[in-house]
Length: 300
Image (cartoon, rainbow, N blue to C red; front, side, top):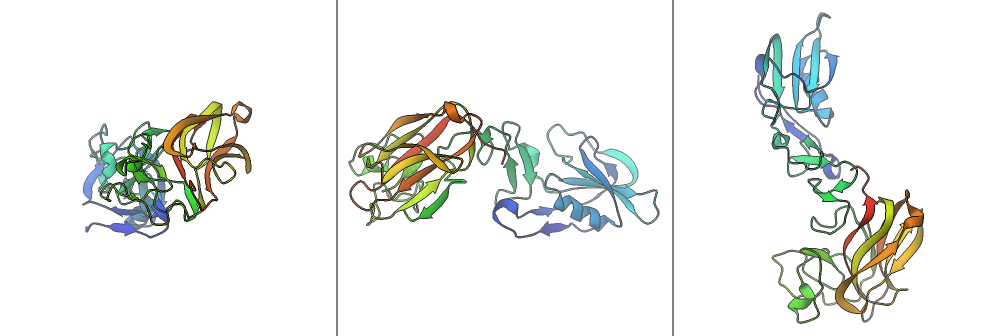
């Protein structure tokens, strides 16, 4: 039997592509069953595995019903850490896919699903964790890019920024957390880009950058903020139930300082943070980093 390859093109990380390895006759994998279904042929079982995001192998064998087969969808392959070796079962066939999830790349009990994204897998994170590998607690520090933040306008087109770019051009230090941050007047979107550069119209673009949704579970949310200091034009907003309930702005300095919101009255509610740039003159940009606090991320 030849190897089978299934793929489709949808949007974002919903495109799945899997390749089945050579079948193993008279063998099955046990203890990793997602579900068992009756199918008319082996090809139908392949397709069902492809359609089930957590399926990485199948056992297929004869059904008591003449002319049909039992298709068992499994969430492990024989090379998974901790999975048992294949067991003998007459007239059954075991097929596993090329499985990057066998190395357990997802942290904090994240679920690895093979065949997605350019990495060959995606991690579905439990509540309270986020990031490509579920490594991050619910904080937004831009070390993995802007992620699920949504842009409008052009003010944040070159973000995030790498390194202490203002200091590279002999300005005050940004004092960012880590390597990546939002620098509204900066032009260093890649580590390899020349340090210290700004776009020619650094303070002209306007726009917004809105965070993914999170749930407030405690008393405090904090973040680093710098840049402009005219709060009616340059600000960070906390949005709850589609209403702006808190705002903060910078200090007319490239240096970011930690500021916070008391959010006790919103415990249990879902919220977002929106960065707003509505100015096109001096200090018409916002610097921002390391949103954190008493929040949890919904499962992704």
